[in-house]
Length: 96
Image (cartoon, rainbow, N blue to C red; front, side, top):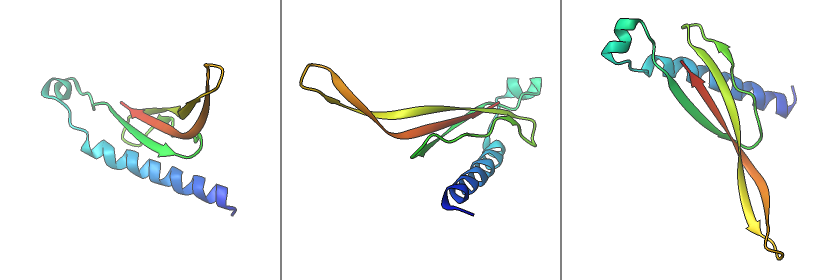
C-alpha cells in the first residue's frame, strides 16, 4: 500500500471514529428530545490537501455531509493587486 492510500485510509478511519464518538456527546434540548430529534453538530479538520469527508447516513441515523474550504495566504504585488496561495484546507463535517 503506498503512502497516499495509507494516509487516506487512516484519515477516513479517524473521521468515522470521530463521527461515531461525537454522536454520543451531542446533547439535545428538552423540546428537541420530545420531538425525537437527535441534534446537530459540526466538526472541522485542518488538512494539507483537499480530502473527501463522509457523506451519508451513519449507523445511528444521522445524515452527514461535508464541505472543503481552502486556506489562503495573500501577499501584495507591485501593481496594487495581490497574489494568493492555498496553504491548507479545512474539511467541515456536519451531521444532523
